[in-house]
Length: 126
Image (cartoon, rainbow, N blue to C red; front, side, top):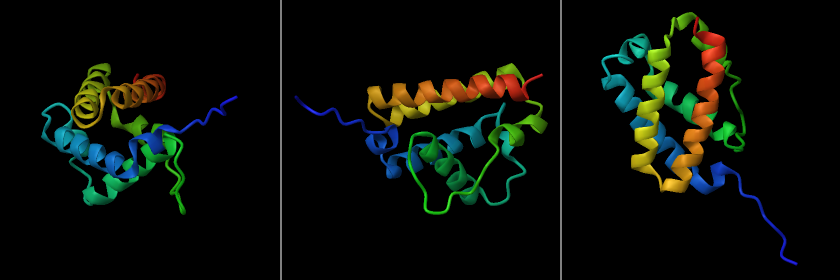
């Protein structure tokens, strides 16, 4: 009998790819007329990208030696997001992972993003 070994999504995608996808995604966000204003106040963008890459890494099952606790829902509540903003975010995210990853891994990460989007919709969109 073969023993089944489960590999978390973080291991299948790899940290380098998570960092690359996060950077490419934020390049798109910062160039997007609808979403760029939400990020204009961020002074240290490399630090922000590292925080978001760490968030995804942990969400995918990864471990960090010194994780910084982040309340993503709490951070998004005061932003006055609209459904159209979330839809645009998800579309750009989907385009980014599709361009950067093989289809199976892209699909799995997009499924995670849809779940996070659903939680944001409940918590942060009025």
